Image 1 (spheres, rainbow, N blue to C red):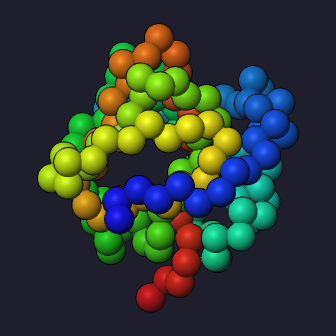
Image 2: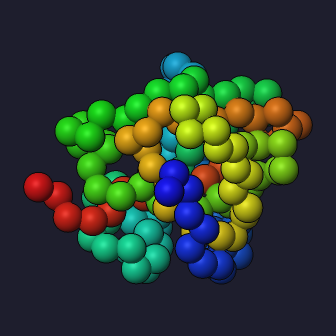
Length: 140
């Protein structure tokens, strides 16, 4: 399993707050990030285990995240990885090239993704992609 759709989540409260969020450019191919004060409490309410990290990630139209594997000992990569798409488009996909998998993650659905396998993001859409990305679980 590289991508598993878990359950629907009411994202309306987040969409209401999203226009006020200030995203910071990461300076690389990873788009923009934000850590608004309301994010962690929302992430904790997803009931995915102890939240290690929660971040909003914005990927501009036409931009992608190159194929990579998140190092399991990096503090940003510990635990299981969950994505909750907030703003997306059918032309935005996550790929696991070595596994032959390409998935569009639908807005309002919680997904568990394998970030320890080679993966990438492709945004061929004319819209920004905004996901809540959560790492949760037991930290060794």
